[in-house]
Length: 269
Ligand SMILES: [Zn+2]
Image 1 (cartoon, rainbow, N blue to C red):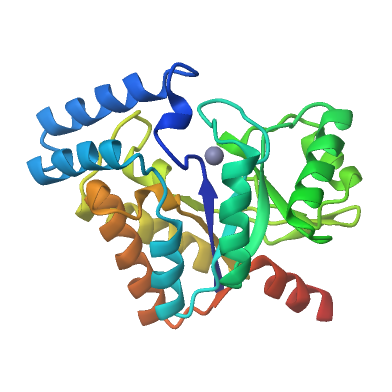
Image 2 (image 1 turned 45 degrees about the horizontal axis):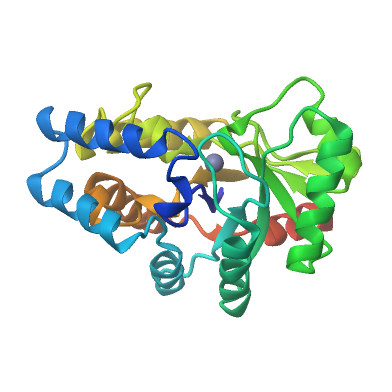
């Protein structure tokens, strides 16, 4: 089994949210609940205020550097449309797309459109024109999908999709590969709540169970989604969980690949 780690970019700055959505009040409620429930330390709480004043809600550069040190190819999903709590502009996205290109990252779309073929096609074309890339994949924001989503994504021309949550090997839908994934940071650490509900030890136990199941099912690839936003000391459990997970996979001799590398391997056979 090999691991494919990827990162969804949901936020870039704090100011992109002002008055446009309920993200800031939700963020405030969450950090107070977490502090009073003893899930985060006073230091973490203070660091969240620091992020706020720095207007910084992404950790893309830091994460690429960490991945490089650990031989993990960085693979990102970045959005070109706005939708549920995701509010950054094309201009802001483009600055990061250029940065990710210069650092050899795999760049894919974080999709908003999932139920209308025409709008899915438009989103595909917009991403293509902004990135000037021909081949790329997609993961839907909030992994939203309907019965027809995957067929429509295939029709639009995506090389792959990785929205499905399932213990299955990659498979083809027309010409598009579907890469089901198994681990998402929030599903582990929030565990069904809207704030951190597990501590690091419980999060590790839960993660090991999923990895064991993927091994027992003989999966070719273990799919992991970790949001760059949490690669920060202001989200200490998330940061430590990610670094622990990387070390755990390395200790278990699991190699890291990105989607493009995996597709090449799959198509060779
Ligand atoms: Zn998202």
